[in-house]
Length: 148
Image (tube, rainbow, N blue to C red; front, side, top):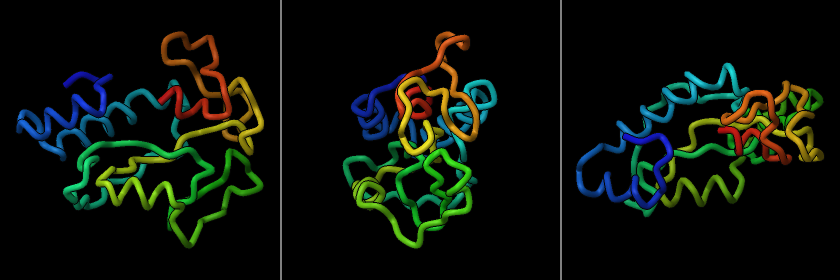
């Protein structure tokens, strides 16, 4: 499996049976765990949880959500230590729609504090790194998502 597959190519591979949904999820979780120590793209990689796949158009397709998107029972700090203990009691519309379409959220990404930066260097949880050149920032308030 190629690491930079498109959603379309993943969907085609899953539908053809050349790879299973569980194998796709495992592949991307392993990549996140391998590369996050040097990139700091992820604030949290969700632990193994039983995944129930529905038949939606994104069934078996992995993704991550920025740390300012509320996910029931998961921390949503918006890249700030002030909100470091904030755990929403509800899912955002984005989370509901992704999961309703079958998408699997694997974690939450680092970001500039309160989405108020442009370089990716202003998170309370450390700088994010550009995966193509670790001496550079990935840029943008969604820098963790870009790096991931």
